[in-house]
Image (cartoon, rainbow, N blue to C red; front, side):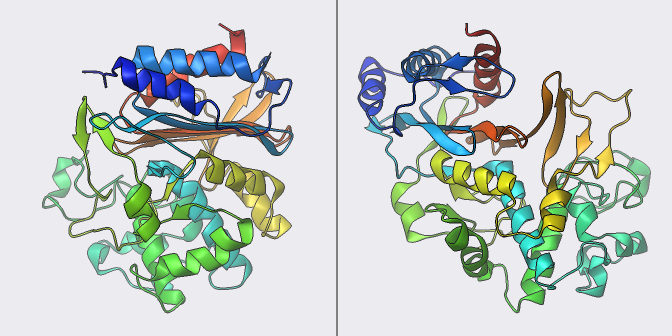
Length: 373
C-alpha cells in the first residue's frame, strides 16, 4: 500500500501550526500510561506525520475531564500544501456512531422511543420485510450491533444458501443472538428516528443540532452537508491518491442525507468536548448515561476482538490492567479516526486523519503513550 507523501514545504507548515494549541499544561497524561510535556508530544507527532506520511492530523487529549492538548498538524491538500487550522473539518467515519447513540438516548429520555420496543412497531421496513425475523430488532440491538444485519447490504454473503440478490438487505442471524458490526442497523434506526420526529433524512440534522450540538457546545459537528463543511473540509487520500466524495454506503445516498453510521463531519476539539460530556453523562438521565457504558453484549473468550470484552451502546469495551477503557475506530478509506477514553479517570484522546494510515499511527501512538518511546 502506497503511503501519502509529503514535501519539505509541507513539513515546515507542520511546525508553524504548532503555535495553535490549548493552554500549555506542565504534564499531559493518558489512561494507564506515562506523563508527557506538550513539547515532547509535539516532537513525536511531527515525526510520525513525516515518517508515516499523514497529510493532516487533528488530535486532542483529555485529562481530568478537560482538554489539555489540541493540535491541527499538516495540510488539508497535498497539491496546494494549504495548512490545516482550527476550522479544518474531517469525516468522523464510524466515530459518528457514538455521537448518534447519544442522540438516540437523549430522545429516549424524552419518550420519543423505547430502547426495547421492536422498531417495526414504529416504522415498517420494506427493505427487509421478506424476513419476518427483522420484527425482533430494537434500538438496543442496533446500538450494540446485535441486529443481525450485515455491515452493509453490498457486502458478500456469508451464507450463499440464502440466495439473496446482490444489493438486497438480509439478516445474517436471528436478531439479538450474536454480535456483528453493522452500519445498516444505524441506517434503519435513523429512518425510525426521522419518522417519529416528523422529519426525513434530509432534515434530521436540524433536530440533531437542537438536541446535541447546541446544548453540548459543539462548534463543528454536522451529519448532513453544511456551508461550513463545504468551505473547510480537507481532502482525503487513499493509496496516496486524492479522493473527494461524500461518505455513503446506500444507493443514491448523497450529502443531504443524515449519515448516522459514518457521515458526521467534525474535528478533534469538538469531538473531545463531546467525549467529556459523554463521560459526565451531561444531558442524559442517569439510566441512559449508564446504558452507554454497560456491557450489552459479551464476546466469547475464544473469539479475537483485539482485547475488547464486549460492546456497550455505540462504544466498545476494553479491559486493561489499570481499569476499563472505551474505544471506537473509524474508517471511510480516505478518512480514518479513533478515540479511547477512561470514564473513571476522565482521561482520553481522539484523532482524525485525512488518509488511510490511521491504524499504523494509532499503533505508534499507543506505544508512545505506554512507553514514552
